Length: 107
Image (cartoon, rainbow, N blue to C red; front, side, top):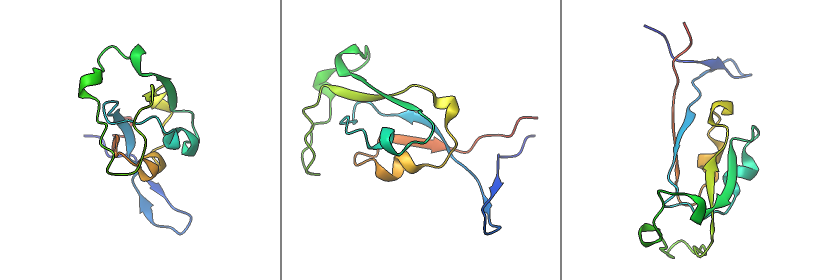
């Protein structure tokens, strides 16, 4: 059985990174915050109409958060395997579109 990938902070505390495993494009408003904060080029902005499994009727256009949802762009995972597990993208996402999980260390 493999153990989770763990690291140590500069202060000596144990830390377990959680790597990106999904991006909910139905809720994404294409604001680009995750793209801007990511140090590893994990994301790319693509045209919403180029995503086959996105249906405009299912798009979440709830304006309660004050963001304009009438964008034709949506974020996509370009290099998910380059994720370092910092979760900065999730911290800045206003629509909570990203999910992460710890990974097993290679044996």
